[in-house]
Amino acid sequence: MDKPTGPTHFLLSFFLLSCLFGLSLATELSFVTCGSVVKLLNVKHNVRLHSHDVRYGSGSGQQSVTGVTTVEDSNSYWSVRGTSGTLCHRGTPVKCGQTIRLTHLNTGRNLHSHYFTSPLSSNQEVSAFGEEGEGDHLDEWMVQCGGLVWEREEAVRFQHASTDTLLSVTGEQYGRPIHGQREVHAMTGPSQHSLWRAMEGVFMKPSESPLGNMDYSHPLHTEF
Image (cartoon, rainbow, N blue to C red):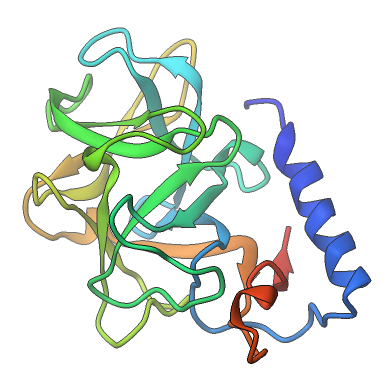
C-alpha cells in the first residue's frame, strides 16, 4: 500500500475552515459538485481509482493508474475540475454529459488516455499526465449518467472525450512493484466493467450567497 501523505493535511485544512466559518458537516449532498475531492469505486470489481509516482514500464511511460481494494489509501483521491475551455465553478453540480478533468490530489497529474496499449489487457492505456493540474485535451472525460446531474448514489461512466472509450477495469492484476493492484484502462462500448460510483471525499456545497464565488470554497460534507 502506498504511504498516506498530503490529503490528510488537505482534509484537516477543510475541516478547520468549516469550523472557522461555522458550517455544518452533517448535511449530506446527494450529488457531486465541481471542486469536490472524491474516491471513485469501480462497482464491478470493488476497487478504487488510484495513482502514485510509479511509471509504466511500457507504452507511454507516464504515471500509472490502477485500481486498489484498500479503502483508506490517500493516493485514491481525485479532484473534480473543469476543462481548459469550460469553467467548473466550485460547488456547482456536475451535469450529466458535462466534460471534466479528474486531477490526482497527491501528484497533481490528470486522468489521461491515448492510443498507447495497456500493459496487461492490451486495451487503451490510461495514465496520469501533466504538472500541477495542467495537461492537455487528452485529460478530458465526459460524465455519463441518467438524470440531470451526477448523483452520488448513481453508478456512472466516464467517456474519454477524444477517443470515445470508457474508463474500465476488467480484473487483470499487476506484479511488483504494485503487486495486486488492478489494471485500469479504456474500452469501447459500455459494460459492467465501466461503472463507477463516488465514495469517500470532501464535497463542496453550492453557493448560497448572492455574492456567488465567495462561498465556493466551503465544504458541506466530509467523509474520511
